[in-house]
Image (cartoon, rainbow, N blue to C red; front, side, top):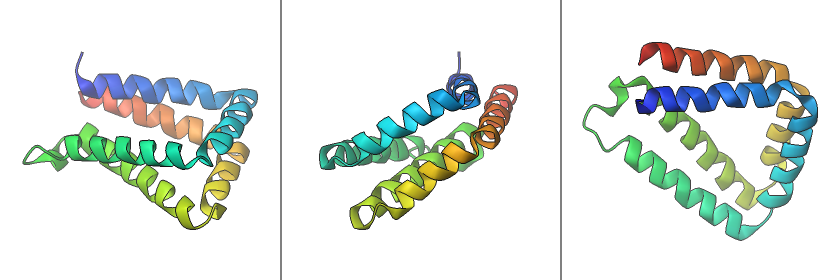
Length: 120
């Protein structure tokens, strides 16, 4: 199984997760509680940096769709973590968006997952 299919499956399961509003509410509540810890922010930032570096090590990394997806997702996560150092407004705004529009996010995750699997 290629990495593109594996990442596509992760996005498909994320789409299934976002279909249930109860699971989304519980998950986002837990995310908010855990996200206020400085240790969690540091560990998540290190993980994001490692993923970004490993996705961009290849010379023409931008030609593979899965590497581009990894780059965009983890860049967004790093921006979000960086913004929480100064204020929790962006973090809380993203949490509210995900809570209110979980069906839209589910459709986007399904589409991205299917696109990754088809392109591999």
